[in-house]
Length: 350
Image (cartoon, rainbow, N blue to C red):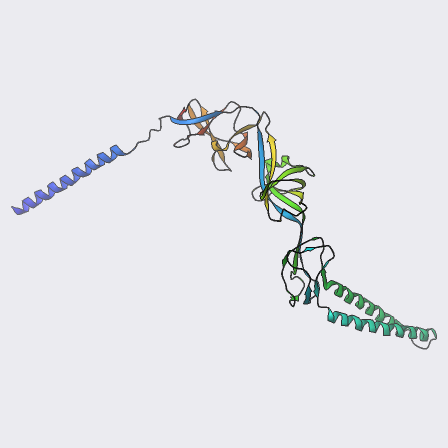
């Protein structure tokens, strides 16, 4: 009897649990939001017109020294004297570093003595040769030895000259790599000289922006550190090869202020204006979806949003110029992209 009661109780418990689970499922299903794809989505739109507008084109860049070089030596030896320090202004030809050339000077004296002796021998052998007192080959050997010694003299003199490191151009000592007593050798930098009396300003322009620049033409430049200081830069080079981002370097030559206010490495901006032509189509960048390599927009047709691929020719601030995919009079979606999909029903917000 007890066994039957246990079985009935177990069956009743299972029934109660199953009923409760079914009730919970119904409640959960009622609470779940069911998206209606046929319901219209509120969006904002814009009609493409053909009015011309003027954009301000701004490109960031940086100022580089007009000339800069790391000086080293062609002869090796201990550094005997350094006549400048970092920050010093130097003139072209000014002595900067002296490398110990004591041994070279001793070698020079030895060669000079050797040349003097050979010149005496050559005079004596020439007299004897004219008198047929010696063989001509002896005179030839002395002459050859004298030529070799004179050539050696020039080599040593050149090495002595190169032991004095001079400034190759007017500039500022921006780095000092060695101290007195260090060993100088070819290929080891000693000083860095930088000329900022002129500067190079470099920006990277896209393919569509290259038409903004003309060689030898001057343009307005702004220095970030001195926004009230307007500079004029003349285009000295328009890049012939694009980088990985398909941008081309544009280099301007800029005269620094008299007090060298602009330093190498400072940032600045190129500023110009560009007026669109009447047949150019431009839209706000916020209307774009997709990636920069595959830009798309939603165009409105018969109350539906149609996803369409376009070609962006140029980006100017918060606008883009569209070269393909849109026509004058087209209506595009500018906002309301949440839940928006291709061929969705839309309602235009007032």
